[in-house]
Image (cartoon, rainbow, N blue to C red; front, side):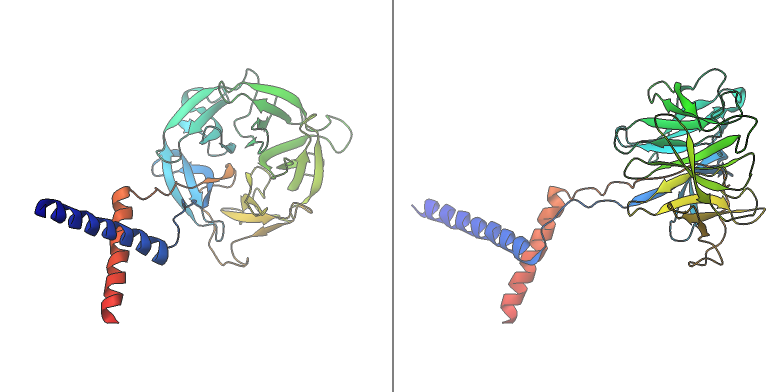
Length: 324
């Protein structure tokens, strides 16, 4: 009888402790919900001293960059960059040192730096320096580049093989102006509108365009209003979740910058001096790809960590009662 009574007291004490932990956690701590990592702005460019090409993280407030990974023997410092939510991978267009004439699609694991060749994009195509983007609603990948004509063309790209399929030329050919439409960096708005940085041979100044996904035809939005270096003609585009359009581009004749671009007019504003944030020029190139992708996931707390939090909260309750 005494043993049973002692056991009953222990069980009651344990139950009260457990109830106290639950009360403490529920009463003093906010309900835990999984943390969502902020999106990261990624860019391709030079990878020195880690490699010929590099993947960078860029601060969208200042343009300051951090070299995350360098890659040897591969050129994609001036190609397109896209994020695919289905595979949670970055994709880049470029070429191997040993075969610079073969445009190739690569995938990049942004957490580990693992680079994988998906495959060549097609014979007679020059997509190494073109843009790359994934449709936010359909998941279809698009690229721009040359296929032997004066104007560049729009292509769809098979994410499993790298093969590019022609959609259509971006504009007319010789010999009535405007001719020679050169579309480069690509970026999708959330509604599926495809924007491109580029220029025409009859004008030559840096402009923002939209591209027709059914025909490839380009429609001029407006001039960027920059007249230094390579402007924004070949630079990557990326929309933030709040709808802000970012682009790489030239800060001066020798260095690059991060810009915001008005998607209604094409006007570009540098985030370097004399822009609003007072940062310095970016130092990894102006012709690379640009894209937002989710940051590293925030790990869920373990059961032991949750128990420790509960015990700490319970201790706080006990200490509070003793002070009364």
